[in-house]
Length: 189
Image 1 (cartoon, one colour):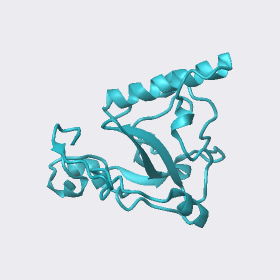
Image 2 (cartoon, helix red, strand yellow):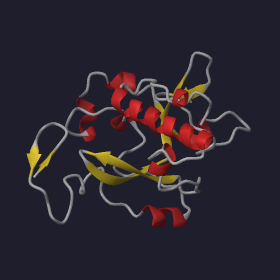
Image 3 (spheres, rainbow, N blue to C red):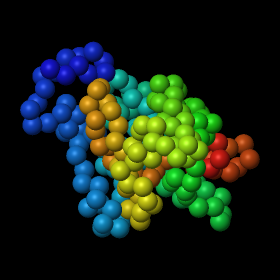
Image 4 (cartoon, one colour):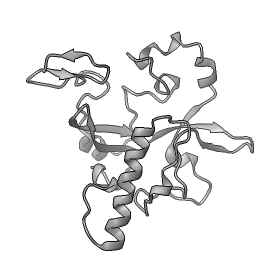
């Protein structure tokens, strides 16, 4: 048996995991990257449906009264969101202060990232290996033409490879410039 995040108990499938057929289905990220074509996650589309979840499925987003507010956000590939001349750096330097809450509203996730960032600082300054760091959860550590990245996350007590694209939600700010809509780093990582 597997207890899901909402407390539901599901029989464990010896050939798979409860989410294997849905948003966390296995994707061969290495093949996607080798094709070098811009990739978009088919299960987490770059539109309003992916900005919130009703507890069961992000596909039911049309039922939400706040949908109009969420439609103010657009999705862009991360490199499009940067000022001219600025480049994306995956692992320039990561510090706990770089993790900013933004509108993400998931303190546990953000605190976990901040804790992992603290370990990154320890590894850089002490030249020691203090345990898992943010770099360790990324299975792809170089930028690629496909915009496809894999991270190793622990979900409901099970280590899972989660494949993501490089689309991020953005919103035009008061100055008229596009800015990241949710969690933002302190120094542009």
